[in-house]
Image 1 (cartoon, rainbow, N blue to C red):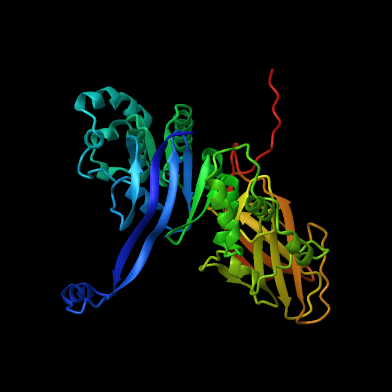
Image 2: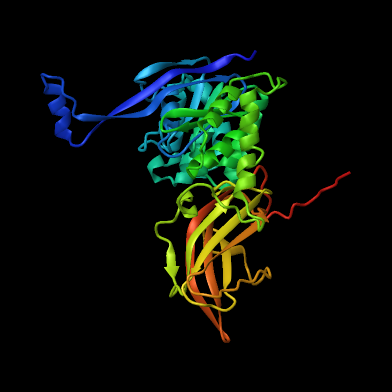
Length: 460
């Protein structure tokens, strides 16, 4: 059995929230011990262990307590309740610039951080060349770090954290700031660390990296541990959580039980098998039979609109006279669940629902995927796909479901929707929604460019 190097037991962190500063004074002077605050639990009775040599990921929505856990483990914060046990020397890369003195130069901060961890000047001298080579920020190391860009700052911070020979490396989202080449270099270092039997605790919104590098993943939600288990299963669960589609609490409980087991060869428990069937193997059997039409357009059993389950852009660009109006939309992952987090090489579906306020001959429904710079990189429409719509009367509602395999590289994209047509020879836009929703594609392997050619390589 592997040695436990991080043990978190019944960990809680409570914050007292006051509406105004004077309430704090009133409470402290109150003879009747009247409370003027509201209680907010950033963490509530969280338990987990990390074994030596593991790479464990922590994921969750904003405000779920991920960073709070790391800060308590590293001693930055004091818990309200519970305990943390550490067996090994920790090097942490938390918030950007944490542990740096902005007035000091890069070199001075290297020595400051090394001294805080417990190294002597002579030991830091011996590691300095490796740190500077990894950071690769040139003569800026002799300038105050307050003059650094965010990318330069994270380069130096990670170079210090990774080169001081820690037994436990803790990283909190910092790598999302660096450029793609620096991120690749950092992840290669992760692989080296894993081969050396060192421990990594990683908080990240990059689901592709979590799935690829982590041996186990912990899902936090509103300060509580919702689930723990294998990366793919927990990522799927997280995708449901993001769009409020997690209907079965027992599914999360089953994964918590699964995540605590160490025997890879053991037979799955009854709960575990049910969770896998429900999560990893697509929609539940009942939902598949009762919830799909023969035309392949999945009819969601939930009440409310499809778009209520999607993270909509509050500043969506909308135009058109709405003779035909897009009244609903959704993205479905390979399991038929609402999600804007998609896995490369898995099938996904874009759904559009349009209400026609007048009879329109041969309307066209369309979707487009753009990168963050606004460049259109993929998309199609019902006319291109020879899927024609006939509108006979005003008030009719028609749906289109575009299903395809995701071949884009891992990254962030934007979805746009439209319903158009021709009036005589003139092209007419009835309703268009630009950048209505973001899409996150996660991938275990990216190639060059925007899409993957799925090359098959033979060498000899």
